[in-house]
Image 1 (spheres, helix red, strand yellow):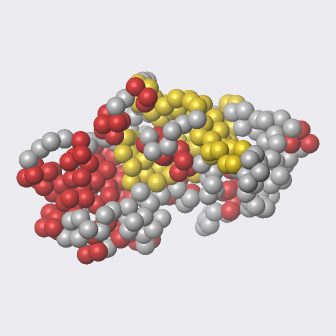
Image 2 (cartoon, rainbow, N blue to C red):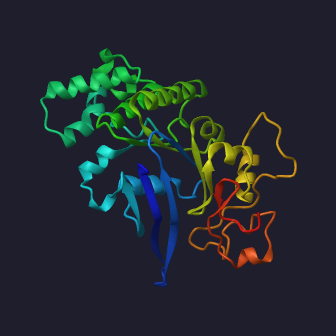
Image 3 (cartoon, rainbow, N blue to C red):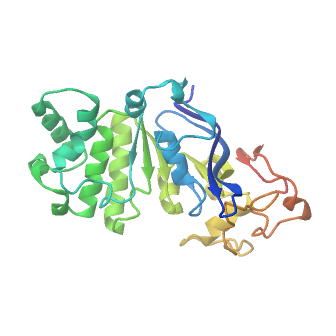
Length: 312
């Protein structure tokens, strides 16, 4: 049984024009996937493809328009908030804005525990210090405020805070993109060590394809609220077959030789308020055929991965 299972998840936002006409931004438009225990599940795609909306829906910060989310076989709708947050937590992108500057390090880390459990103050403090050691921060720093820490140290505080309820799943929403390159490697190595030591499962959201290639077991490529390709990391990165995945790989900086026949992505991302008919990628696709503008593609198994393109 999968630790996390998502079935036909949709998140649509109504937008009403000054003339009273209501349209919907389809931030997520019917996505389904599953994540096994102790796996790292990479999620990639351009800005606006629905990655952050997916993270919010999984955390319960956004209410799905339709579809189901299951944690360990239990529907998320049947779980109390406290139960859900003991199952899944999130590490945010910006270590500067995601923590309260008025609280001390130990208070920031212990806050989820204070909300969910009634314990003596010393136990909150002791548990926070344990987590600080676990993420590579000295417990003597527990009484310092966020402005006294570097960006990498602040992100370690965010990781410790996410771990204090002993969740099984961590959503890592661009956890290293705001850090210096040398610090990025340290934080990634910490995340991989914590996964081995604690048996964690990660949903790793990133724009950086090299990071996802390094850390993930499975990879899902999203475009305009839909999945276009989804499978094992090696299959996706070594031989992408969806035209969008190919173009995304070609657009990413790399020292390796690239296929000269595959060009980087051209054109602008369509408006999610008024997406193209048929395949949402067809206006930017170099392989598009006339039928692509009419027929909506569905995920099909091809070459050991799921792909939503009938012409490849």
